Length: 184
Image 1 (cartoon, one colour):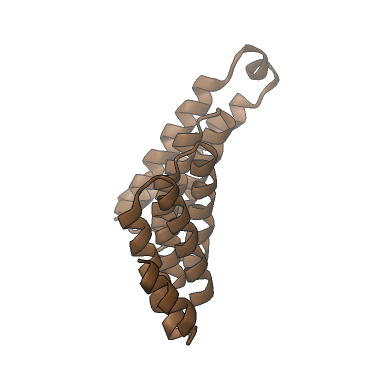
Image 2 (spheres, helix red, strand yellow):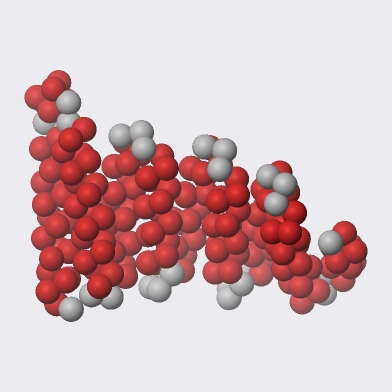
């Protein structure tokens, strides 16, 4: 495990060096996209090494660095995927950071018109909130249901709404829960 962690640390250092060299005056004149792409790949490899070492926060941080670079290069889909990977790593170490990363992915996916995948990640966020903040979980499930409904994925929307109804009933919001059950 220590070998994987060390490999991850070395890859992060190498990626940071690539990014710094891409920010030089001549690089900006003559194009730095290759160096940035190389750095992205190194961050992904570092994240994988950290995952093998079960260093979840370090892996998530590497994915976040890759996501930021993907945004700079205009690759929003790759950035969103990296944020999802970061969120999944943070789930094991820091649920609030997981929510933050997954929300960034949701924003990118909705900007790209990818509402079904945004809804899927909203459900993941809702599941994280189930342990700590039912109101926020309800809000995420409702937003996911709206996205699914807009994409004609009615069974997925109904699944979200049933979760909303369940949590409304737990919060003794019976009228809302009954209304949702009848609607579904």
